[in-house]
Length: 192
Image (cartoon, rainbow, N blue to C red; front, side, top):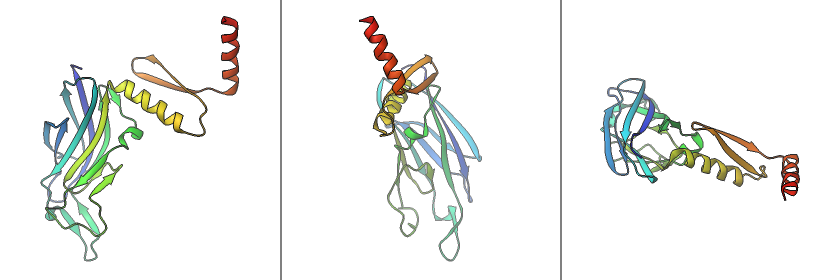
């Protein structure tokens, strides 16, 4: 998919130093950046084949000096960032798809707070060093539609799910009612 791009919106906070990140897609380093303001957008051109991919955002370079804690171990100020929004090929990824992420923390450079896990699932808040992973599929528009359909079909409160695409950049979801189903059956009977 030539002329592809990925755009990521971040919120960042610093204590002594701003967060530094590396952005990888399918293991290739595409961007290394310091998130040097509270709100920052990173746009990266891509050249991807259709299929499954992996977006990774690596937080690196943080040490214990980048976190201020009180005598009880409560964090008062921290160098961290939030992944606010991801857009691939002009399609904003819905939060339901971003929730498939995981963050693998690297505690080797500073003290690990009591009770903190090595892996954070469904978290877009990145404090410690480590890798944030998000699998995605291209073409993105079809992946979004298929994922929504799958989520709807898994829902016990939804009987039938239909989706159509009125334009290249919008998707309208519609849940068929019993009356809709009867009308469809009547039309099928008339057609033959």
